[in-house]
Image 1 (cartoon, rainbow, N blue to C red):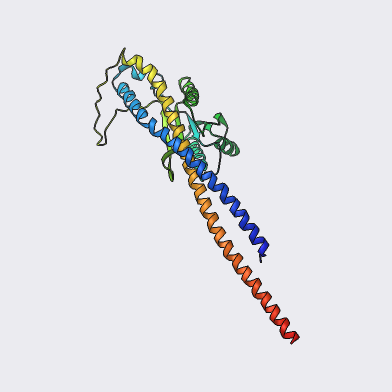
Image 2: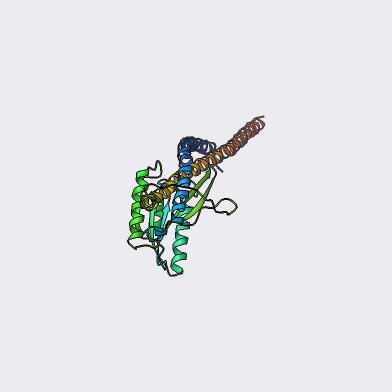
Length: 292
């Protein structure tokens, strides 16, 4: 049975842990607010850019000749990009991405398709290497405050691999931010660039009247690489916001668990003290009876 001293030490230890988890929750909440504002500001721009790109790709005769729109006759190699965080203590945030990326790789290999795995985030890099996965390229130190320059570097690598024929498809695996307590896994194909027409909620074609100057083909040459960069940048921001939301929720749950443990230990301490006092009283009474 634990002594009073042991219980008091455990209560003090849990109090210290609760202070740390509470502080980490507050820091994650502040970072989440900043990252949430960034992703909410980017989403309309990304949506309009995709709309313009798909409109041009749908009507330009030469669109199929562009290297980022050309589709290989057979998909033989797929690049899988796993986007995780640089730190842990975020619940299942990092583990979900790693498991999904590994499941995709196994599925592709079972179907006879080669894979090349790339990773963003220190946690994903370590987990994938530990599981014996050979990484084609990796980046770290981007999850806290991703910049557009980081997305350009990653996109340039992916475009080079696709245009040179090293891979026939590029898939991004990341967490999509919905709310601080809800993040959903996304598996997006960003290369080849999708050429489907823009449709509304009823599935009807949304005819958008754009006037291109100097011409749509010239704009397409500059727009398609930018589209890949925006897709990667959006995934980075979504992942960053999701990481902070997952960490805030995990630390809040840890703080709540610490409070429950403190209450339980305090109750055990009071019971132990009561038992000790009762024992002392019994000893005094027994001594008095022996003397008297």
